[in-house]
Image (cartoon, rainbow, N blue to C red; front, side, top):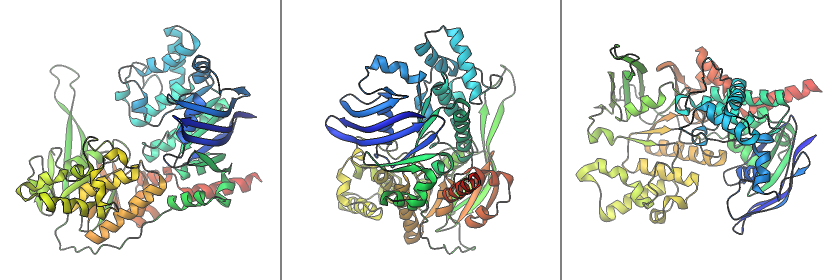
Length: 541
């Protein structure tokens, strides 16, 4: 039975066409994947269904929920459908949740708005919803605040808000993009279980083909506001009639071409980490209780050689980011030592040591000052050069060189960061890291927020820069597919320790530690998901 029927949906905002003739169906008990790159119209389609489009938006066509036409309803009329008939899960739980409200009150608020019940009754419903998303009362009381939960737990709260009134349709907009692989697998399993239990339809919006290949019954692929291909998941991946579908598929499996670095054991390592310990004080439970500490990094040792790319993987909270901050001399360590090309690194590290390292962040837009032109943003690291910092024409030449190295034009230095796409912004972030010719670049989830085709371009760029300039990378990521494609060696971190390390392909093919095997098994894998689907299809036949 068709639950959601979208026919020839069109959307314009202030006269600009956003969606054109979108056709989409979701049946009760069915999972439909909506795939496409940023700007393809995926999220805007969901917002159009929910009547959450911006001011100035005009819709045409039809959106029917169980036969009831939604296009043309007033906002007050549509309010009945939101929450009770349609629930929505957003991509970033920390921004979707209110930081000053308890999780119980936030879930209960949905109930009180739509059911006109008292707080006590709403809290009972909230407790039941949180229990259904595996946040039991004995471990997760209603009085907790979002900041007291992990990323995966916050996403479960967001799901509890969406399903509290057991809607018939659930829309999940990139619900696992920011999560590590094991937490992502848990959230996807949870969504599948809720669909099975309630018989609701699920519209799963994502750019990750491996996720939908393993989960969705049918998929629709969007580009430039249109659905270019749709059908049963296995059939779409077998046929791939549209060139854009084939391009997405190839980008998802893309492997950058790299030259194996020539490692000289007698050479001074670019990065030498030995027995590093990082402790954080824990709040006292009693006034005169002894001071306690949490060990975030516990005796970590490894080296990175010139031109070598090393991956650092592990779940959220394992200590990856703490370790990277210590390497970059942003946090003190309580034990061990860190050297970059023989120079000691610490909170009082010299500019000579700091200029040997740069970082590329996950969110390029958030890491730039939007009021400054690109030229000024790129040359920010020049302050580490002191009196040697270039000026005048030499400064302009260095900026142009950095932009050229990442495939941009020298004229881009005069633009502002909002004038660029997400992939171009990440190229600018890489240019900023390159401009003082560091020996080591720390890439902290540098491609996790990018679409598959843009991700492939950035990985090719990183591989080329590493080969041409003999750059060394510490590549921190929860995306094991990316780590496998770009790194020479991998370090697996759990609870502050390196539990396994080795050459990338050898480690992925024959992991030794149970935790490594758990990570690899949890990671979505496109070919593996399609093979499993073919097996299931054969068994069903």
